Length: 493
Ligand SMILES: Cc1ncc(COP(=O)(O)O)c(C=O)c1O
Image (tube, rainbow, N blue to C red; front, side, top):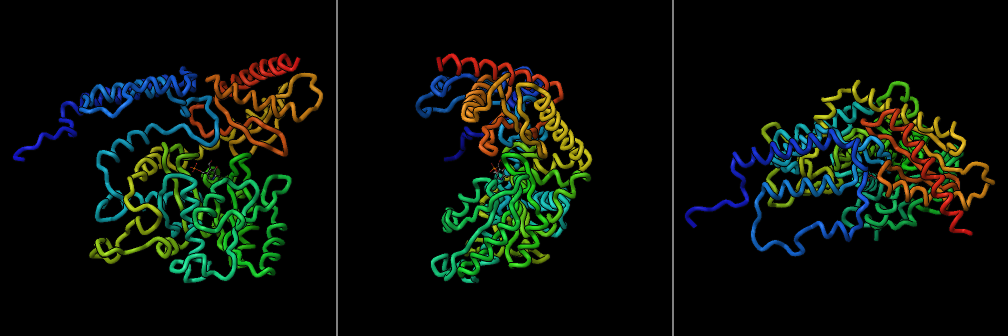
C-alpha cells in the first residue's frame, strides 16, 4: 500500500462546511426549544421506521448528508429536557457551553486515564475537582475523580469505603474470607444505587440496613444508632453509613452532622450521596442545612444534575484520596505511567473503575467559569424560588393538594372538587393523570409516593423556566386532571 485513501477523515473545507451547518442547526434548536412539544407522540414502531437502514450499510455514505439527517432525526423525535416546562426526575437543562465543550473534547480526544496521554486535560480535571470541593464548601484537600453520573460516583466511593474499613486482606481474599458480615446503613429514601452496589460488590441486598425516616423524611438517627448497636452485639461488622443530601423523591437533606457523629463514635465510613442536592450548599442561607458535610469521608455529586452539565458528568470526592488509590490502583507491566521528573504522576485510572477515560471535565470546568460562584448561586436560588412558587400555587388551588417542598422539588396531587376522600381512587387518578401529562408534550413531570399518596413531582433544575411557565403548568395539570377524572368516572359507569 503506497498511498492510503483516508475515507474516515473529512477534509478541512468539508469539515468547516458541515460543522458550520451543524452549529447553525443547533443554535436554531436552542432558540426554538420553548415552542416545541416536549416529547414526540410517536410509538417505538413509528420511530423504528424512521431509521432508514434496517441492515448495516455495505458501503460508506456521505458525512454531510449523515450529519444533516441525524440532526433532523434528533430534533424531530426527541424528548427535550431543555424545555422550560420540563421538570421530570432529576435531569437538567444542559448549559450550551457544555455542547461546545464536548465537541472540543471529542476533537482533541485525550485519554484522561493517564497523565502522559492527557497532559493538560489531567490538570483541568484536577482543577475541576478542587473547584467542586470549594463549591460545596469542603476542604480543597479532598481529591477525587469524574465519573459518568450519580450511580457511578456512589459506587466509586462505596468500594473505597470498604477497602478502608473492611479487613485488610479484602482485596486479595474477597468477601469469602471475612469472618463477620459487612453491613451498610442508609435511610429508606436512599436512591436505588445502594442495592446495585451491594449486588455489584458481592455483599447482597440483605447487607443493607434501610433505616426508617422521621416525619420530615430524614433518616431517624436514634433508630440508626439502635440498629448499629444490635448488629454489633450480634457480631456483625458495620462499615458504611450513607447520608443523603437531597433525596430523589422530596429533596430532603439528612441530618449530616448527627450521622457524622455516629460514624465517629463507631469508626464507620461516612458517605454523602449529594448527587442532586449538594450544589445548594453553596447558597449562604442554606449552609446550615448541610452542616456536617465537611466531616464526610466521601461525597457523590452530579454536575449533570444541578450544575447544568450535559450528560454525562458525575464526581466522587474523597477526604483522603489515598483511599481511592488503595482501592483502584494497579500497575501492569505494560503501563509506564508512574513517574515524572517531579515525582509521581496523576493517573486517573488509579482513582476509579474506568481505565480509558474521556474528557468530561472540560464541560464542567468551562461552565464553572462561565457562571462563577455568584452566577451559580443566582441560578440555584431562582430554581428553588420557582419550586416554592409551584408549591404555593398548588396550595392555593382548590383542586390541588400541596404535599412537600424542599430544595427545588415540590410534590402535590390533583383532587377533584367536592371529592370525598378515597386515597385508592386518588392514587389511580394521579397515576393516570401523570401518564397523560407525560405523553401530552405540553409539560413533563414525574411522581413520588409520599405516605401512601401517589403524588405528582416537579424538580426544577432548569435555567430556562420562568414564573409564567409555572402558572401555565398549573393550568395544564388542572385541565388534564379534570379530563382524567371525567374519563375514569365515565369508564366506571
Ligand atoms: C440522590 C440520587 N443519587 C443517585 C442518583 C443516580 O444518579 P445517575 O442517574 O446520574 O446515575 C440520583 C438520580 O436521580 C439521585 O437523585
